[in-house]
Length: 156
Image 1 (cartoon, rainbow, N blue to C red):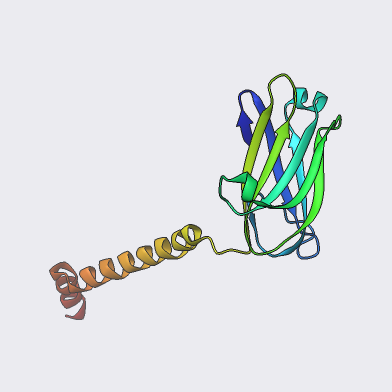
Image 2 (image 1 turned 30 degrees about the horizontal axis):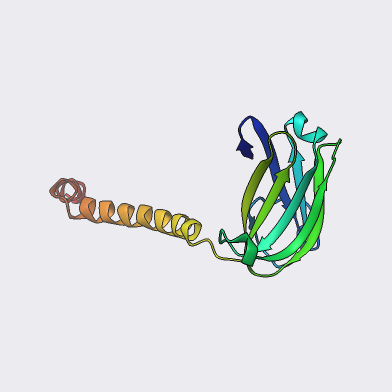
């Protein structure tokens, strides 16, 4: 969900050729044909022309950016802007513009078939630290005098 002032939109991405029912937001797992659907949550956005543009790269210099797809602004009374494009591996920006008295601009950063190292670290390191903590506690328990005394009592 993206907000500009009081206006909100929601982006969903689909790749039914790989996963029929899976929906993605900004991390797209594979390259290839991708369907992008923007829900115009704010009813006011349904009365003004809204367009969508996809550019390769994450930089802020739009003049030098490579446009991958461009859907010119038009009216969307149903509240849905959609399009299909082929995406290669890399970073992309989805730029959604709403024309009107107060022009609005929304941006999403897409990561296509890229490893998110932050998620990888949190999904591997945190459980690993938990296991190491349990091993350390077990070692301390086994080496404790209390356990040795209890063991001696049980053996006698």
